[in-house]
Structures are given as C-alpha cells and as structure tokens.
Image 1 (cartoon, rainbow, N blue to C red):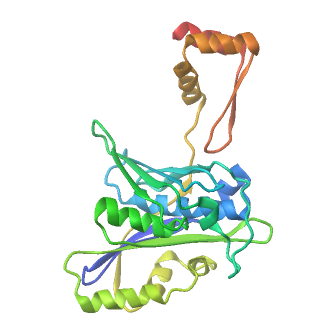
Image 2 (cartoon, rainbow, N blue to C red):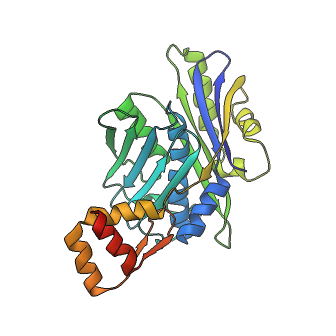
Length: 291
C-alpha cells in the first residue's frame, strides 16, 4: 500500500516529506496506457504532487500542478489535496524517446525546457494562489525545486524516481522533499548537503518491501528523525455523470442543440481516468430543459 510521511529532525533544522507511490503511478499507467517515458514523466509529477498537496493545511484545499516545457509529452497536469488523493494525466501518453547514454529514460527531452511549471492552490479564498516559474531541466524534480525557490523563497531538495519494468508495469516509485528550516547551522547544512550528494538512484530506495519510515532513516542516517504524521495515498478520480453534465451545460443551449442534430448521443471522456460517459437524446433533452 502506498503511503506518505511527514518528519522533522530532532534539532528542528529541516522538515521532510516522503512518499511511496508505486501503486498510485501504476494506476495512472493503466488508465492512460503510458509508454515508459510517459510513465516516468507523469509518475514523477504525481509523486511530487502528493507531497505538495500534503503541505496544505485544510481538508478542502486543492493543489494543481501543470508542467509544459514545449516537448513532445505536452502538458502534464495533476490535482491533489492534503489527504493523499491525487489524479493526473499527460497529453501524449505515447511519447517514447531513446534511452539516454546512461541507460535512463529521457524525461527531460520528452518534457522540454521551453515552458513553465505552474502551481495553483485553492485554499478557500476569493481567488486561488497562482505561481509560475521557468522549467530548468524538464526532469521534474529540479523544476519543482526551482518553483519553491523562486515562487515561495523556500530552499528545497526534491528527489523523484519511477522504475519501469520490462513489461511496462511500474516496479517502484517514490520520492521526497526536504526543506531546511530557519536558523539551520552551517554544520548541519553541510551534513545535509553531503547526504543529498551521495544519494543512490531514488527509485532504488523504493524497489523493495521496506517501510517508508525505514527508507527515510536509511537516507538520513546522520540525523535523528521524528515521524510526525503518516497517511495513505492513492490515485482517486472524482469524475461523475453530474460533473460531466455540468460540463455539457457550460457549452450552452445552442451548441448542445447543434450536437443533437448531428448525433443522437454524446460521449464524454474524463481526462484523468479515461472513463466514458454516454448521454442519450433523452438525457440531453432533459439537460436542455434545465439550462
């Protein structure tokens, strides 16, 4: 089962978010039938989105992350809350590039570097918070870190990994975000930087049956960690007939009538989970009466 933890070191010099997201990313892969490159790009964004959503305070808060670097992957978009629920899609699930020279999936060129990371946080105010920064590498992790530094003035190390098996299934996925807190001493900062500089491939840490807490303590073995919270996470799409009906209503009476004249049924498809919803002539006539 996928789950996520929040932790802090005993000197309160940095906070840590870490998540195992293997099942979550595999669910997304099944919904979108992604190639390995697309799985890695979407999976890394989902993994980051889970932790970013976890940072929000209230149950009804909603976070949207959109990444478009002008590459063949198109837009990657995920929507999360602070309770471990997330959904997402990639415009081009069929993007498939040759492996890089080191044998790794070429997420950077699939995403591209001519575009933006956009984060929208709806926290119940009149207008949602909106932040946007330039994409640095297209590898997702560095781009999310750049967003935190530029838009929120928060130094962050973001490590994300997705390991795709030979049969395209997700073998492992997970990651962490670590953020130094004010008044961190130089000695501790140097120790933290040394830890981050000596990381293995991130997905390798999650390619086993270890608990997330044990992985956190393995990576940050030079610190004493206190686990302060733990929640399950999953890919959960909240689409429904009612939501699709509202989308049709938004088209307006004239456009709906034109569609009926051309076809007696309307098929709508959810971007996030590819679930299809059919509206026959009777249902459409009922919608028209209610507009």
